[in-house]
Length: 201
Length: 201
Image (tube, rainbow over all chains, first blue to last red; front, top):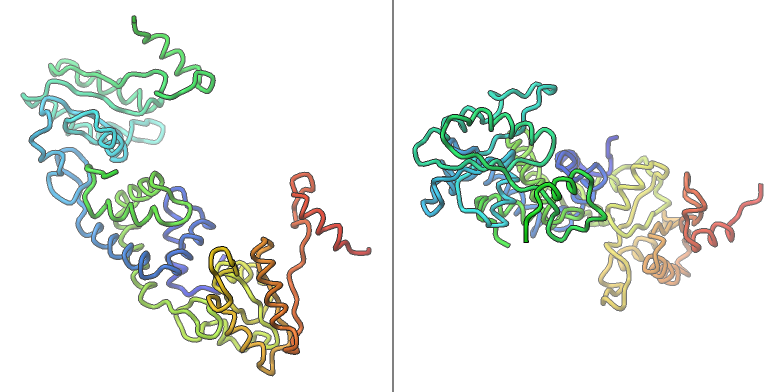
């Protein structure tokens, strides 16, 4: 549906915003309206910030993270433990782990999960690069921090097989009851995993 | 919370996106991630579209609409009925009426509603300009298309009082059961309005 009341410039903004996750056509219009109403404090700064980010962002050749330097800030950070590589599916997962700041190591972003049905093969992901990094002498442990989904777990299994014999120890995140979670609201799979991995007190 | 994994440029994009309606900090991060992943097709075009819109958008001096020409496309459109002015709270309401394309008249955007508690007085809105327009000889009807909220309706009452004696006929939108609405899900206020305004068949 075209939108005769707004000019083509606003229309273009609405259509691009509607392609962001979490925004449909209606909320994209609301967001555009907000941008129009707050042109000085919001629209112009966002245009400039996006422009700057688009110009400077690069994908780290070592780990697949996105940053504005090459290699990325994390790969350059010498205070991080060089013996550990944490493997994640997407950059968003890396961000989540960094926000939690429970780990201080380098990462490896796969860029997705294996999915034979969708035609995603190991060479379509950052897997060959991971196997090469695993052979570096300083790497002692690879933590597979993949999503606890079917695809995430089968990708983890594949990686485990591939990494066998490389001499590094391979680990995965624990499964169980999320902190703050109520048993009544958890699915059977989580409960089963939590019982199976129960700890002696 | 600062976000050490992403560069300051991405951080800036996230913070600005989080100020849009419908996007919180978490969904702003997801949106930013999508922008980063699709730099060529999404981030750069959005930056350019926002930049262009920010440069060209002006508020129509006649009606308060936003457009890229002065007066706006609607005010310039001579095919519209010059005898009617449709008064709305915000530009988004104008867009909604134009999408429905049930009316072909000029608009007047108040820019909000009266709210003595929040210190919004008539002179803070586009009300003086509306009263001036109502005195133009060609204007015969003013349709108050304000929201059916307490503030919207009390603003409508205020305008009705002010427009009394100007010789124009003042109308408001009908209240009742929304088309497609089920009685079971409607509030008492809507049902009462629908019964009170019932039509003979």
